[in-house]
Length: 178
Image (cartoon, one colour):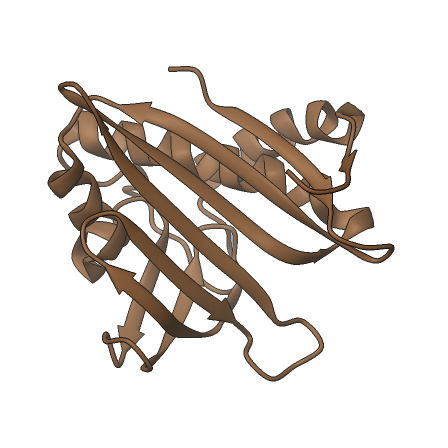
């Protein structure tokens, strides 16, 4: 597994963290892992709400982040766009692209609109989430059997995030368009 992460500035205050990984599964299975509440709960978040374009969902991530998101686009099995915390100062875009690569599939996740001084936390977080997805696919079940909540991160997620954060903090932030 070789998870690749980058960070870039969008303007003087906000930026984007982008992480990608290649998985040993087909794109339809990967899509299911990224959109089905049952599969999401194995590696990323508890999700509930109106699961359709224009609908609002509630999420509790393995990191403890909890909040609403609006489903902006859903082009199965290749593209998903969410707006997290819509209408607030913390509003961000969360976008995922899935592509076939032979017998494998690539997932690219980008979170945009983040404060520049916090990009490294999000880069390390998404890196950890994508590793958890690989573990969930490999196990055919939960990457976090001990669970998590809005007040307690999944223990394995947290320890890996703590391990990765210094590397992301040391990583350069690109400026300008991609």
